[in-house]
Amino acid sequence: MEALKTIEIETNSNPTASVIWLHGLGASGHDFEPVVPELGLPSDAAVRFIFPHAPNLPVTINGGMRMPAWYDIRAMDIDRVVDTEQLMASSDAVAKLVDQEIERGVSSDNIVIAGFSQGGAVAYELGLSYPKRLAGIIALSTYFATAKTVKISDSNRDIPIKVYHGSFDPMVPESLGRKSVEQLKELGFSPSYQTYPMEHSVCLEEIVDIGEFLKAHVL
Image 1 (tube, rainbow, N blue to C red):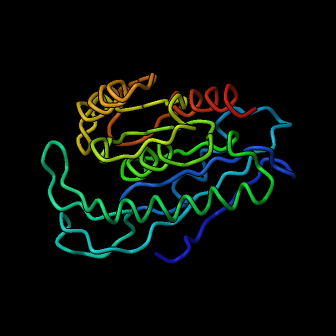
Image 2 (cartoon, one colour; image 1 turned 180 degrees about the vertical axis):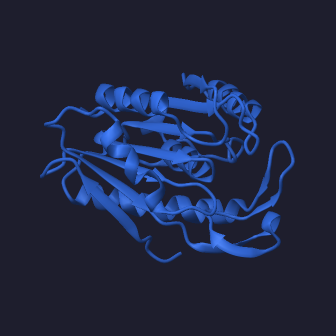
Image 3 (cartoon, helix red, strand yellow; image 1 turned 45 degrees about the vertical axis):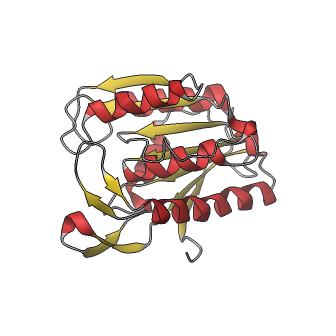
């Protein structure tokens, strides 16, 4: 996969922390740009937010139409049938962004991987398998597509994980969010789970809570 194009927002100069935030199917890196000012971070916090754009791929469930996607979804059954090889390729591409942040002077343990929907599935894969210690995983309205195949790195066996889901989500049912939490627990993790009365989206209360997570783990 080619290097991912990204949007970057720095809350102050000389960032000491980074958040790599992955959008969902059919969206773009612009999706979560408006979230940054709403997180309630301290005025002196120096965080670099990186919003990558997914490549354009044909998506089976949408009649083979090409659109921004981290991987193909072949069937919308309760567990999803996804192209795992494409998901892994996306994880590798995002890992290069993590490597880049380390090269720019940000410690790996001050880098958070966040993802919404498809992006969350990639965030799980990357965050759990990355060879260096990361600060945390934020999983939004998503599912753990590679729970049976992920190769967990020793460095991230106790990584903080926050899972959020809408209780009225018609696209990714909340049952998949709860299943992800159980799968994580079976693998030895201690994820925190929070729901909101919303559909397949984000809400202000959730964004504020994400800000608290960032303040606790990278600031």
